[in-house]
Image 1 (cartoon, helix red, strand yellow):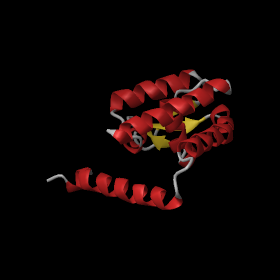
Image 2 (cartoon, one colour; image 1 turned 180 degrees about the vertical axis):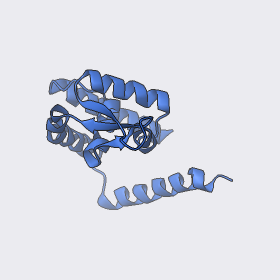
Image 3 (cartoon, one colour; image 1 turned 60 degrees about the vertical axis):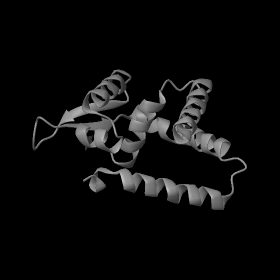
Image 4 (cartoon, helix red, strand yellow; image 1 turned 30 degrees about the vertical axis):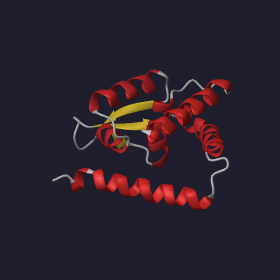
Length: 138
């Protein structure tokens, strides 16, 4: 439960920083952009998988990002049923500023936490994730 509460607090702080800096994005929309900044042109399904969202949620997020002029959908040349999602120049221009705000949010959240505690927490949460991942369900 504490991980959920901490995640919510981080998301709220980041959302506040976006608002204060006149960035009209939700944290959910930003998380999709983060994955596209890492790899532009992925399929909508791959994006859903990478962000742990279901297909309807991803469709809604991409629809909104497209309306905002931040992404475009293009049918895959190999299979027209597959939509590939591409960043616009406007979305690319948001990268540095939003990543700086995300880094500040992390610094705020980790204030007073030792490097050793951060590493232990990372290891524990990684193990929890691996224990519960679909690979180990059986």
